[in-house]
Image: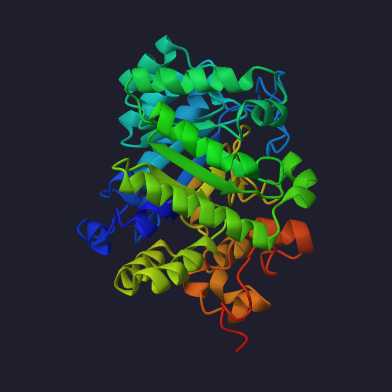
Length: 395
């Protein structure tokens, strides 16, 4: 996760994280990525069922009843373990998490354990009443997926009217005084809509947006050919940075982030070196605190059936199951060679990654993409758009 507004617009300084000792249990949510202990933020797919049919769905969800989901009692036990373990955030996801009947009960239980609770949703089920209920539960944040403007979003989501319902869900959250933001997965089908998404953000006073780079997982594996080229990716990053700065210069400090491609960090730093060398030094220090991709270390996933994965995109790799062992035990098991290597990816990546001068701030980028593309999880990430010269292996 790369904070465009934090780095490029200077809304965060290294001293902000150092003030809290970079301890994940003390850091405010917007500074968690700079923690030193890297206690895992956990994405929990509490249900596989979904009312939409998104073309890029990593869980390949459908609107059917799925068997073997964790019971309420089992789910509460997981939350208690995560609280004791010190995980700072539990992100309830799906499928569509709001289709799970006991979700509000689980959110309340998470809060009792001292966890910051957020949900990732398609937004179509957030009525005015539901938004108020979520706020009263103490939910920290609602991330609503919006993968384009109306025509593109509805095609991407597989259901006509999905855009209007999601937009109403956003409005209901804002009216209900609960923090809400957009989640946008970038690909060839929707990249042209990004300027329009910024227009929408300004019009609707949406305080946050996350732009996700495409990961080749689940139904998203069928979209490899629709990922942006390296040059297209650079163009998109330029648009995102320029529009973010324009909003900030107008006094509209929207939080803008990119996710799932840590090449964005060095790209911003190199841009800052040209525009503001003094600020660039702070950017580099923040990127070093961030440490790059945190799959299997500061970021993990629990599936609907209790399976534990390094992240939500990597379901072919199962580390254990919370029905058999606590998450905290699975996550710290020194006998799991694969997991231990993920926690130290920098010493195992190969090719241009191994020689890259940005390895300490990228950590080899996304291993799931490398495995999907090359059938080699330690190969270079094919979505890294930095040139050999930019990464220091060509003069």
